[in-house]
Image 1 (cartoon, rainbow, N blue to C red):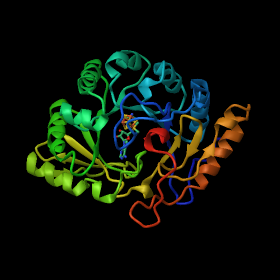
Image 2 (cartoon, rainbow, N blue to C red):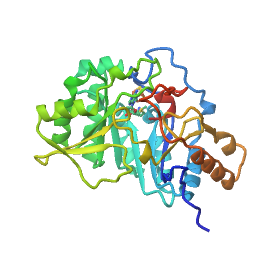
Image 3 (tube, protein in one colour):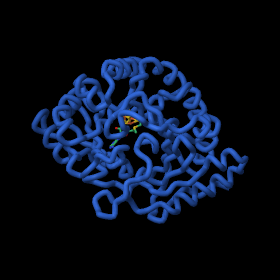
Length: 332
Ligand code: SAM
Ligand code: SF4
């Protein structure tokens, strides 16, 4: 008998699973990780590829159709293409994507492509080498650009760029990134700075807001219009330039929260299931995976977690409490 889909108490259908494969990273974006002294999870706490693939298979039996691999930096996990191959082989998976900083992409792109991966979200905040080094504390912009070149040459697509929007910092980057996207056929997605940084640097005054970015883009390039008839459950609001060249997306968790459309659950690299990026609680599934629990037991745990899902984060209220894990450890 077919399983009932994952619908929560607010009638939201969950068909999207984000899988973090590591909490480690090869760069140190200040809004995500501290510069030094990061404590990473011991290797034995991290799910194996077999454990991840089994969990994904069970989630797919509950109606999950889209998978996204993230981290930390997923490309620092050894042999990632082996996992991609396992996941693309699961019947019912319709879409698989990777979120990466692309520092190692040029080296791994061919193997990833061969494993069946096509969709990439590349994290890049600036095309200015000095500002890149300031934000990430590593001088790796040339490697990221080489990774993008290689991925486009191999035929990956769609490729999107994720840029984190921090006020009084990246304003000079908004227009050049959009121009880069227009020239290369890449959608740029600006992500409002969220309170998930390891050092507690966030406050609302440091968020460069969607409306301010729209104004910068309209002044610097030309008019934009909202794209009509989009999937109402997609997190980004999307715009196009009216000259027909280029798309822009905004993930505006602060100024335009989209919790009511959320279709996502998240598996952390150490095997915790989360119903929200900002959730305070999480459910252990590693214990189940490592104790020969049945698929039914895992299905029941996924259902219970979705059933407990809250209506949404409270970033804009006094009630907001930052989650106990920073972004790199949850999986963005
Ligand atoms: N390392 C990969 C990367 O950077 O794309 C994958 C993991 S990273 C945590 C996922 C996404 O989170 C990145 O694309 C980055 O843009 C975003 N991110 C990290 N810290 C953030 C923050 N404090 N606010 C908003 N977005 C953030
Ligand atoms: Fe690493 Fe991604 Fe976090 Fe930057 S945002 S420190 S690339 S995990």
